[in-house]
Amino acid sequence: MKKDDPCTGVCAWDGKTGWCLGCGRTVPEIKAWRKLTPYRRTALLRELPRRVEQVSRQQPVEAPPAGTGRRS
Image 1 (cartoon, rainbow, N blue to C red):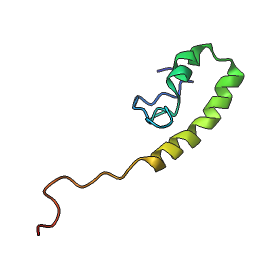
Image 2: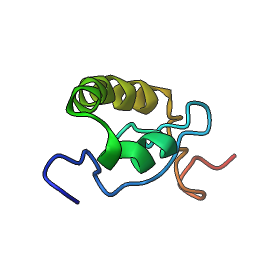
Image 3: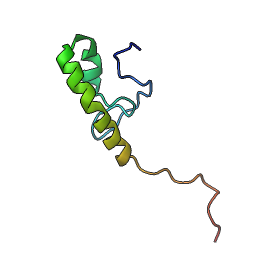
Image 4: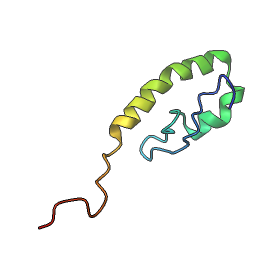
């Protein structure tokens, strides 16, 4: 991971948007990262926090583990 690379090492994908849950980029954006112009990188870097926030709000809340709920 380089200094200007937004990768967080999470590398899990949102099925709806195709965005990485860690950095917010798509697979094509990750592959093209080193070839992007400084202008395009800066524009993408400004967009990524919004994407990560949006995806984190869409993630379902996990159910409690089995056996921890009330019994009937």
